[in-house]
Image (tube, rainbow, N blue to C red):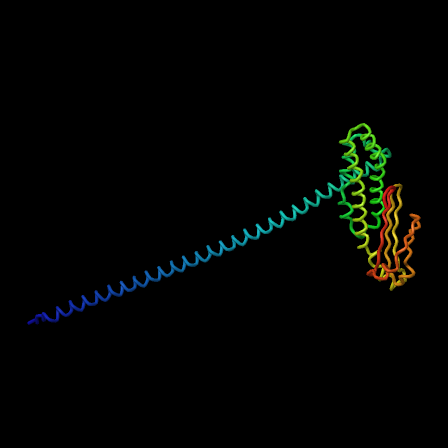
Length: 282
């Protein structure tokens, strides 16, 4: 005779099965939740990595743009500088060629034509060549510079004649024009020669006379250029003996100057003196 299962035992099993199923579902839920969190964490890390890479690319891009901009600015500055140098050299070359062409022409310009005189003076007036001459080349440039001054001064007698002719014919405006040109040429000549003198005194031939006196015993430096209408003389001395050097002689120009003893004794060393003489001006 078989025994009937107890109702309590059957219910207990059902309850246990239900609890087991619930636990399995909870474990599955927790596992899915963990996987979801891991996936979210991976996605977050991926987004952060992508953002870092984007920022790095942007930084590198900006740095490259800045580098290229700086290089472009440097290139533009260099190009502009080269263009300015080229323009200056071309202008100097044009002026030099025009001046040489003028010097090669033996006949004087016709000053009766104001345009011809103005064209001559526009070229002749420029002092950039003197100013830009390097000190090492200065001594070789002295004679051509004085030649330029002589070329302008050679026009003065004709300009003076045209001034008188205009005044005699009651053409006061034209007479005033030639009078102004006469004065202008003198001023330009003096400016050229003063610039030349100032640069020469910076040249070691004159500025180092004191040092040369200590090493070689040569206590004086001379430079003298004589042309048809002008002569220019420059003298520099260490003045170790003021009583010996008070007389300055420029034999090439047939001129001598006596330096007052008081000036020589009070002057700072080295001492210098320059003489400019034109056919009507000293």
